[in-house]
Amino acid sequence: MPPGEPAMNFSIDNDPWQKLYQNVTHPLLMPTVVGFNVVLDRIIPVTPALLETSLLSKPELSRLRSRLLHSMHTCTAEEWFVTDHELYEQYTRIFSGTGNLVIGGQAGIAAVHLASIGVPEVLCIAHSVGTHTGTILRKAGICVLDIKGGVGNSSDAIHLVFEYPPGLVPVAEGIVPRNNRFIASPVHEPGSALIPENSRAAFMSEISRYNRAFLSGFQYLQTEEDFARAAEQILLMKKNASRMRIHVECVSVIDGAVIRGFIHHILPAADSIGLNENELLLLLHNLYPDDDEYGNTRVLSPVQLVNGAIEVFRICNLKRLHLHTFGYYILVLRKDCAHPDVSRNALLFTSLTAAHAAKGSCTDFSPVGTCALKQIDDAFGPQLTPGIFRVDRYTIIIIPTIIAQNITKSSGLGDIISSTAFVADQF
Image 1 (tube, helix red, strand yellow):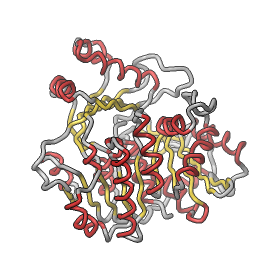
Image 2 (cartoon, helix red, strand yellow):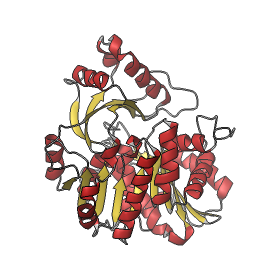
Image 3 (tube, helix red, strand yellow):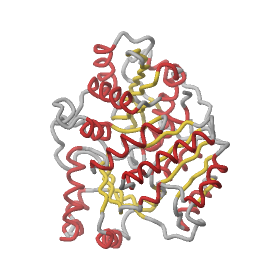
Image 4 (tube, helix red, strand yellow):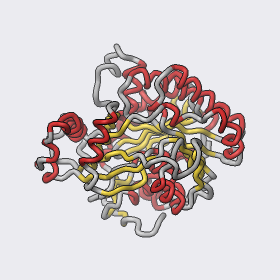
């Protein structure tokens, strides 16, 4: 683990999980391509003073304030895609002196993180890379491929990320209070997740030696043609690099057309998906809009999360699905692709890595995770070995995660978790 890892404090007797965590091995990490969503994030800490200040009371910020408060009320990582570019530019001007700028976007965050944990080669692909963004990536030892035409020829795209602790506003019933974030971002062009025709041959040559690809940005696709082209692009990548496994990262987009395009085109072309419980629920709402269990509920139990994950996995014909939620991870693998002990070690390694990235003071088992594992064991058990289940044609792995106390970072943790678990896994 990286130096400065918060001390582990196993105050609850969770044997054999204590032993498993204490014996985690550093996995073999393979050369990885990341794309396409690369931006800068302006991290804005939400404090009582910010909520009470006249800044958030400005009339032009009324919609942003309302969405921020909803995210805080539900402790959900929400993202608002602002379609009015002039309004969004106004937001960036208002908050230009607030917080600090860091690398952002799912691909940008994953690239810097993967390089920091020892992935031997990281190639970051983006449609346009601004000067500041390109400098950060190169300083992290990352190769950058700007598929539009040269790093530094574009302005840096900036997203607004509001990080908040629990307790600033009342939390909705049934929600576990936790640190989280709300993101306001502009809508990027569909082409930001597509390889231009005149760059395709060079792109395919560039990626041919890589074993893993962590892809994002599909939330910006709009038409059926966009999604079909993106799916074709994924299939060509797999054909061109025969050892490559492709992971796509989900986001909390609420546009039904985008979700359906993701389900019907992107997921069937990919090998793996990473998502949180809110994103799983959005997929299930669109797959089963009239179903009482999935169509109308807002919070899923641990057993419902496993069932929902299996359902998405089955419909989209995936090899791997990784769901990360507060206190535990759920991994679904196609049985013929599974190396369960290796995958469980990858999840344990990811849990420790995420606790370190959250910059907390110490770590301990999450009681939410141990309770969830018991409920899942009651429904799907017995466990073959700790956390490993067989359900029909699937291998299911559940681990309770390590939780860092007094964390100072929540932004990007989902991308850190998904990218680490994917690159550390063998399937």
